[in-house]
Length: 119
Image: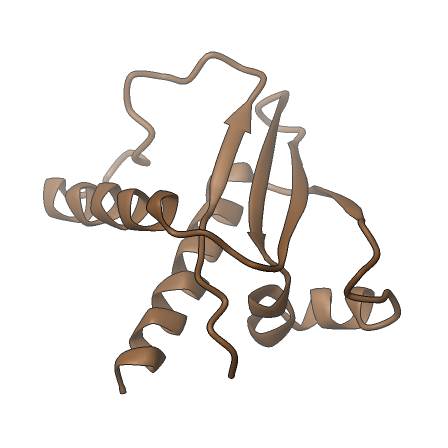
């Protein structure tokens, strides 16, 4: 597989709370999440794609930039949607879901890819 590098960047149109870690999360898990986000933010995807996440329950919209190839590899929903569109086409994706869970999924995908690279 080609080296895709990697970043997840997210912006929100809502003022962030003092803590972005879900209630009930241990301090250790919060630190791991913080470390992972720091690593991801320093990386850079060659095939980045913008994903607009609309979280209706929180009345919030967040924008994520992530690797198209990793989305296709690990999230079959995106495989079905993106295989019909050329890699050279610029696309914008909007989805309605919980933004925190979507961010967690992107972090999980990035972690899996980093783990596979080390094998």
